Figure 1 (cartoon, rainbow, N blue to C red):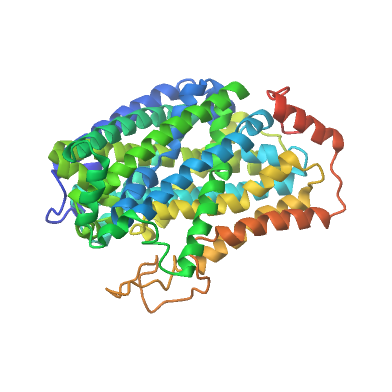
Figure 2: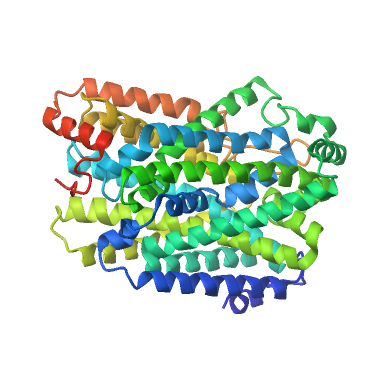
Length: 550
């Protein structure tokens, strides 16, 4: 199917490796994962099965699935590319992504599992007014999911373009559309069960593939990391500067502030990512939720050590110039390194792993966003809880199709951006719109509905608004080539006034402040009994199996 759709837009091959072999490996992977999804879908008999996999996964299984969900195209393609082109500063992305899990483990994982049912809004609306809070939480979930989807679709476009020799804008757009269609099929057929098993298979494949390449690269450097770093520095036009901080973010005072802003977004963003939070509802107990995070930290930490070797290995063996000239630019570093190491076959296998990464993550994002709309807005706001489980799941599936189409359109516009950077923007929105409200709801007795709405909408509007008027969207030009580095490639279009590329340093504190001011300015007083119930449930798990749609 993929080969047939892409055939008209394949020009004279500029692919790396053999397009025929690459298409064959892609097709085999798609067939295997579709078989997994179909098999898992046979047991989808209720909303709990579709949204939370029947809460039947163990802590180890869910932890591996979380790592599969979290180790997205940004981790495998984006971070490796960032290290290959920016050196030390690129590795800082992975440090931020990993440290973020400590925040998630200590502050939200177990508490959310005990308090909620299917979505983040279950927790936020537990002791507040359901209608406005669920609506705000659903809007925030959709916004974060769409931002994250942009990164995955951009990664998919660049990867498939590189492997199939697709040339021209039309051909690249078709590849992104094909990925979007596959994503929709996964979600419609498999629900959370099918998505989880795809994520587990993908995580195992990703770790094995990255480990193989890491050992191979180190072998070429005599199993000596210092020698590898020396070769990488010698191959880079920046020489030893790639081994020290400051190449990307330390050139100016504003660059240093931008790095602090990025760090805030990365460290706090994970605890507010809806698709990660939803994974905690797929386990049967709070103990399993804790085990999930521990497993995830180990798997993710090991993988990020691999990316350090892969990034500097690509800098040495491929070279920044060749990486930046490839479709997808920095995102092509890992596939190009695979081709340099093992030729066509290794490239095809690693590409299949990367493709698996993208499909698993976009499926998880889509089911989270569609569940949020169907469960929070349609079922609990529009229908006031008077809706059958079958009807709710039907609406979730329709929503998944709409979200998939929006992701395709957005991915077309973002296809040349570094996907690790795009994910950092999603983290900034999550840290601003979701995390303050989650923490206030769990820990502040005085917190009320107005505080929740001010925090969610304030964090959402400020983060997205600052991104729109930042150099990310318009006005950033390469001083050497005079080409646009923004999403809007026309260099004559420049409406940016916010100087930072990541808004976290402004939008996250603002969201906390708005939640505080909104609460104090409202006369609404929460039900002490409801807060006490939430506190006991979140800390002990007592009553966590009860429905929370009070």
